[in-house]
Picture 1: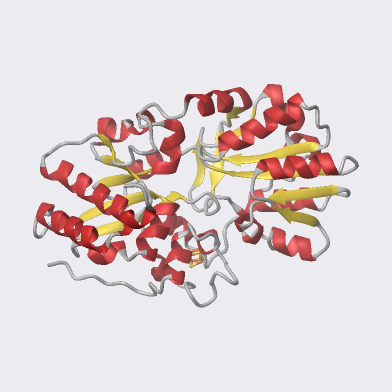
Picture 2 (picture 1 turned 45 degrees about the vertical axis):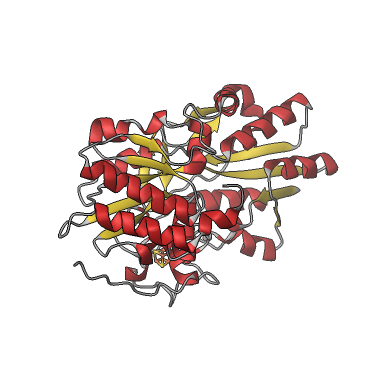
Length: 371
Ligand code: SF4
C-alpha cells in the first residue's frame, strides 16, 4: 500500500468488519480502549464504530496531549505570558484550553504577546529574531513530541540563545495506562496501542499490560483500515486465549522505537516525582521536566510560576471521559454549555479530544443494542 486512499478502501473495510463479526462470541461484551486521541478522531471521522458488532464497544483513553493539561498549568503559563517583555509561544490547540481565569487566547486578547507556533524550532527562531525579549515555548505532548522539544533545547544551548526557555508539560504514556488498569470502575478487554508514541518508544514499554494485567495490546496506525485490523487482531487474541503486544503499524513503528529520539530525551529530560493530569489527579513519575544540565533553559525556574492547584469546574466530566467511564454525550454540558467554540473542558478543545470528535462528527448520542 502506497497511497492513503488504499487505507480507506470501503470494500476492504467491509471485509474486515466481517472478520471482526466472525471473531466475537455472541452474548459477550467487549470493551476495547483506543489510547490515542488520533485514533478517536479517525474512528468518528470515518465511522469505524458503525462497522463493529454492537457488543464491541470502543472506549476512549487519555492519549490526547491537550486534554490532560490541568487548569493550574494553564494558569501558570498565563502568568508567564503576562510577564513584561515575554513572547509566549504554544501550539494552536493549547491557546484555547481553559484555565481558571480564561485561556491563553483570552490572555492574548488582554494584551499578552501570545503566539501560535507549529514547532519548538519556530519558537527558537522567534527568540533569535527578538534578542531583547524573553521567548517561552509551552511544551506539551507525550513521547511523540518530546524529542522535538529536546532537540530544540539542545540547539538553543549549542547556539547559546540566552532569551529562550521552555515550560515543560511533557508526559509519558505508561503511568496513566497503569493507573487506568488499577482503576476498579473500568473493565477493559484490550487496548489499541498508541501508534505515534510507539514510533518513539517501540513496543517494549507496553509489555507490562499483557504480562501484569493479562490484556492484549495491538499497536495501530491511524487510517480506518488500520484501526479495523487492530480490533480484529485484539479479538483474535481473545478468541485464541492469547495475550501479547502485537504491532499492526509495522510500516512506521520499529520494535525498539527510535533510539536517537530516546537518547536525546534522556539527555534533556528527567522524570518529575509526580505530575497532575486533568481529571485524573496526580500520577507518579508521569511528567517530564528539564534535567539539571538544561535547568538554565527552564521557564519555570527562570520566571517562577504560581504552581497553584486548581480544581476542575463542577460541571466538567473530562476526568470520566479520559478514563473511559462515560461517553462524551453523557456529560451534562456536552453540546450545550460546552462546545468547540466555547469549551468548558479540555476534551472539547483539540480535534483529538473525544468530546470534540463526537461533537464534530455529530455523535450527540449513541445507544447500541447488544444482540
Ligand atoms: S463536554 Fe466539555 S466539560 Fe463535558 S467532558 Fe467533554 S470537554 Fe469536559
